Image 1 (tube, rainbow, N blue to C red):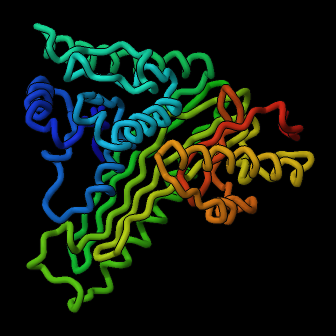
Image 2 (image 1 turned 30 degrees about the vertical axis):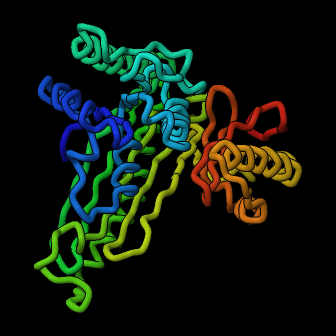
Length: 362
């Protein structure tokens, strides 16, 4: 087990690499754990899988805006929207995103036009950026401390990393929770439950190393080409009344598989007495009416989302099939503004306003 890092994700378009790379180098030289794809990815690795893993682990995102990135169809808008969705999972959402203007006359995307920018052409740019990164990391720590004091529940995360060589081998990287509270002493069991589930996943992955497949793998291959990967990155716990919610972004990639898998796993508990809320269905007085409302809200959100990406064709049938039953909404959290439902097929989080429902849980 190792201590957590505070990862800073560097978002940019490839056309700006020559300008962005020296900036990332300067951050790294100053002790910042900056993640830039060119420096972290190896030839042949699944770039989408690795980028999503890093983005979900990141404490901060520095996004570089330029003429090239804005003119690249859909690129910046999708990156920024994903970053803003991640920001909503933070305790203070304006901490997560630091925008940098590489070009003075660039048209700033509407999604972030109200944020404070750092300008590349400023004389003390490097100093300003480093100060902003350090300041935001300090604010993040303070926000977590305030939330813990208000809830009278403390938490911390520690990393478990493991690699077993083989044909295939396996690799795991996940952050495990520890919770404690004088007021709600049973919350310590939440960490036991989460750790147990994640280690069961890892135990299954280890089993693969006992089944060597020399026809598919050999020790002459790079390790990442013959290694199954499992990654779990938690978001900041959310506390609403007596309910604590903890969401994990899960990433797995089996060697030689056509595509990686990305998903969301959530844990929701009544803290006193400690009870697990295993489904949204169980909390509503009229579960049928609640499901109808949730389906309508989520489908409208997903259809609008596809339109924002510039897709001329919106696959409504695909969306409807992925949002049909309660099983499609197994991931959910309780947050300050309401219930957030997470679609298992689409990976998007949709806010559901509490007054729409009558709940057994208040």
